[in-house]
Amino acid sequence: MVRHFGLETVQAYMQHVQDNAEEAVRKVIDNLKDGSFELTLDNGAAIKVSIQVNTQQRSATIDFTGSSEQLPNNFNAPSAICTAAVLYVFRTLVDDDIPLNAGCLKPLQIIIPEGSMLNPRYPAAVVSGNVETSSCITNALYGALGVMASAQSTMNNFTFGNARYQYYETISGGSGAGQGFDGTDLVQTHMTNSRLTDPEVLEFRYPVRLESYEIRRNSGGAGQWKGGDGGRRIIRFLEPMTASIISNNRVYAPFGTAGGEAGALGRNGVIRKNGSEETLEHIASAEMQAGDVFVIETPGGGGFGKSDD
Image (cartoon, rainbow, N blue to C red; front, side, top):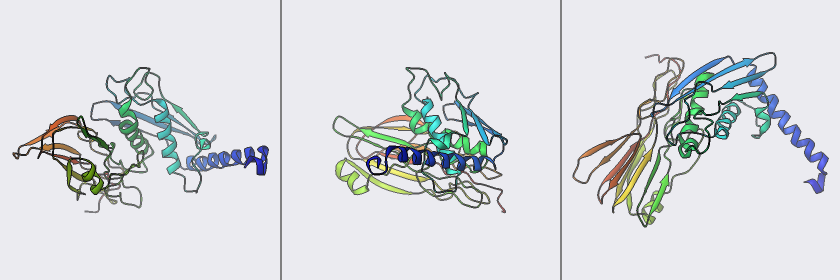
């Protein structure tokens, strides 16, 4: 492109793209109001965010002051993840067909206190920040904006393995409803877009059997617009392995908005070959024997608006 059009022209159009994105976000800000929200994770940590709109400058301040201090577990998220979640949310508010770029951030001032779970100091553990905390940040932002109910605040990270096999997947759930639309059933939401392994490939490569993967009917929150339903995924093990789950929304449900009801809680459990059942926490590991079944029920999305019923 530089050889064909020249460096000056290419740089000029790069600036045009960013300027256009900046103006698109400023148009969104023109219609926003101040808001705040607090979202509690299953481990008790809290994400607090306030959004203050400056109508004269057509800008907004997104302030995460009050969020939990740096955590002793791995649910801390580097500030880059928090910034990416803000960028994503405000990009979704733009109707125009624009490429995602740094221009979207120019009207936004983002405050992330150092030493908090959203801006931890080295060497804080952060492995769950990208998958779990990012989902919670996104939903907290939608809560503060009041434009959409919560999707599942988790990616339902499921791993299993032994000395020979290792496997990891994230599992979809319900998305939140909003003004004029229902949530979507059993879909990857917001900060994740990964695909599941095909059942045939999973069973060919690993000593497991996918017993079932289905929609959890009526797990989405009720409302004028209904939240999307979560799912139920059942995997039977054919040889001994260790299975682990990192998840959220097993204690605190995905919230509804504008009078809509919360989505159903997720659930993790094991059904042993002898028929006995074990309920697992939102973070858990289990030693699976041949014939044991791991059951993951993912959360439903929140509803939006009061139901007419």
